Length: 189
Ligand SMILES: CC(C)(COP(=O)(O)OP(=O)(O)OC[C@H]1O[C@@H](n2cnc3c(N)ncnc32)[C@H](O)[C@@H]1OP(=O)(O)O)[C@@H](O)C(=O)NCCC(=O)NCCS
Image (cartoon, rainbow, N blue to C red):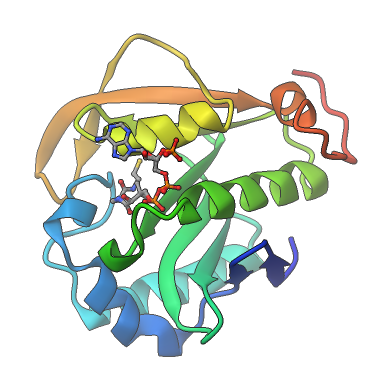
């Protein structure tokens, strides 16, 4: 996976420890944290430092590829992340600071990461999940071609401190190929 991915309006780059302060400021919002499965609330600068160090280690081990979403000033607006989930499947996760919502940024960032992932990694599909009270995320995933695997499931959220109804989805390599991108690796689905 490349260190930098350029989209029309955004640069995805590898996050660094010095992003911790701005990451904590942007993410420390219940409207963000409650929509995620694994992030705690409140979210401190130290929590961000730990997350960023783990992201670097996981990248080296080939266990996850987290990108900082940045604009022209290079400062972190949010994160889009490809990681191996508890089932050993590759999954995409993301969040964006609230001041950047509603401009199509996440659609743009997530699409770029999906294209990169199918291009570089030998994987047949990528999974995703969202809580049912997060229709914006569901809308993004469906526009990207993700299809729900089952009706609903019970997903744990650390920030909520309980399980909540979630929707799990999957994007097949073949669907992504229909976007007209070249995906080098050909793995059986
Ligand atoms: C989800 C999130 C990343 C969206 O970022 P964003 O850059 O505003 O998203 P985009 O603008 O690319 O797309 C949002 C889409 O959802 C739509 N949308 C927004 N609110 C919606 C709602 N309540 N119901 C249905 N669709 C909605 C928008 O119209 C847009 O669709 P469009 O492109 O067809 O107009 C951002 O809100 C966020 O960080 N939320 C908290 C964390 C989170 O939910 N992470 C994902 C966990 S699964």
